[in-house]
Image (cartoon, rainbow, N blue to C red; front, side, top):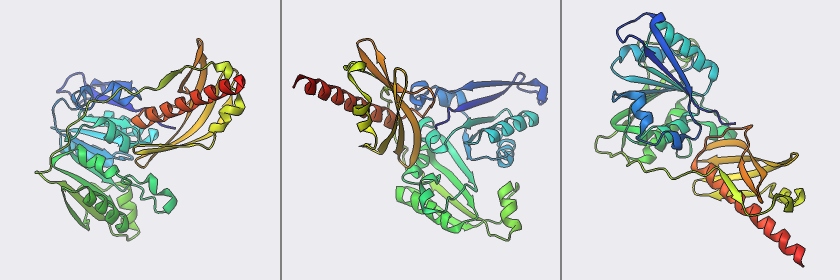
Length: 346
């Protein structure tokens, strides 16, 4: 199930005050229709940074490095992206307690956040400290840098910007290096990491076990232009169908179970069909550029026809692939209705 992004904006009532009780916290749920609410290069980045440099930590955990970075770079905005709601809440309380007005937090999958929300050339530096390498072959798709996702990060970096990865797994650092090398326009170095001013939880753990730490630095060349942000197309997420709901039956709609659908950069598997009082619901597995989303699509009556829409029980990230998948399913359902009408006339 996709998580709606939680955007936590920490601001001081008095910009010069350092007292915790002077903090005001504005918490707003970000619309999961990312492109419709915040277009690339639009309001999101402006409200996020106010024109200041943007530094991003992916997977900040308990927030040790995030807090260190915010203190060391007070002139920059430090954005933390984390997919654990408990880590986000813990970091929120810590940032408030320590009085750091330049921190922003986002709850969500970093690959989609970077792809959908961060405009090309907007990030000065990414910091990724000890991400899970997911060593088993069947878990390759869960790795942060897999199947083209390195390109999302490289696009978001400004010319001269860097991405730093720390890991205890040399093979993983080498794999990530190859992913960025394949994108081109970068300078890459991989070396043993001697340590820095802050020691995170996992660095402390791996060093106590005698494991070496590896540092991968990826620098986007100054001469490498960032791609121009394109205007997003409207992403339709509900479709009115020219077929009467009562003309469809469970047996014909069940024929969609097991259907595999594909489009540019995505593939989907339509799985179980569930029957409600006045609805049909399919469970769908959608993979796009290495990202897997599992959600439900619902068919309900509407006027003289019916409507295909996202079921309210799940909230996937509303990407191009989700819209394209639903369009394909809508066409298949209309074809089923046409076939039943044709068979009835025979």
